[in-house]
Length: 357
Image 1 (tube, rainbow, N blue to C red):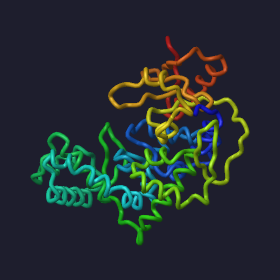
Image 2: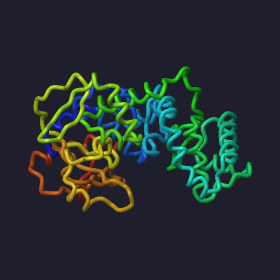
Image 3: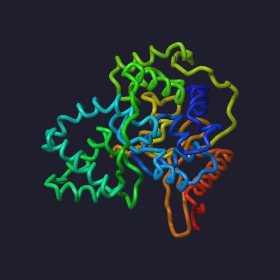
């Protein structure tokens, strides 16, 4: 389905092109949930959707609590806006907890132990305020709860899934945990929550398919379909060369987009939000550059299509971005790449350097 119109519409719906958002929480709210497994990359994902923004602005929004970081879709870390965290946890967490039962057993984490660890973590945060992961591990150990192996992180993840805590930033590669406030009452019922999840997905990521939505949400197919069916009147079915998907109304203008080059971080929603990514990338090229450790490479996006990968090097003189284009780029794309490097450097508050400097 390598059709340029699909890529162009997704650039618009994902607010990579002509984003109206002006604050980090606005961009997160539009996307509903933004993959944040790679913390520096997730901040840059927001920077791409907030032209002229700075990393410090994103950090401030996280520290102030307008953006939360917690485990959501597919059991991975995401950024989510303050007003969306509770209903998303209510919808998704029970399935994630049930899916962790085997791992809990392997780690000898029974329900009594997890209830105790929740209490210990909550009491520590009530008394001392936000704490780094290492400090919480020490407190758990002092209360007779071993954090050996992966026990510690699974206890903190469970406290997060139970709606007690969230991550309020990262310091020196240590996640900072804070207490999550009480949920509003009442929370939407399951049918309403499924409808809202589908509405926000197809609005911010359309055009997309049911299979894409099922993959992204981590829901069973039947529930994902129920969510989609409940909002069908708000969507329009679109077809391109035999491919059929859904997009929220009103459909954005189909005018050709101006040439564009973006430096996407490895887990950006522009690629990750879809099970079938062929609208935006050439799989053979991409797979040859994808590591086998589960990390996705940062990509160079040219006119909605992945044209290569990139790595960053931060030295004493500033930021250097090393590109690996699939094919030698035309001069226009090369200039676009250089402009994107400067945009990224400005976001980080660094000087953009070039090889040999």
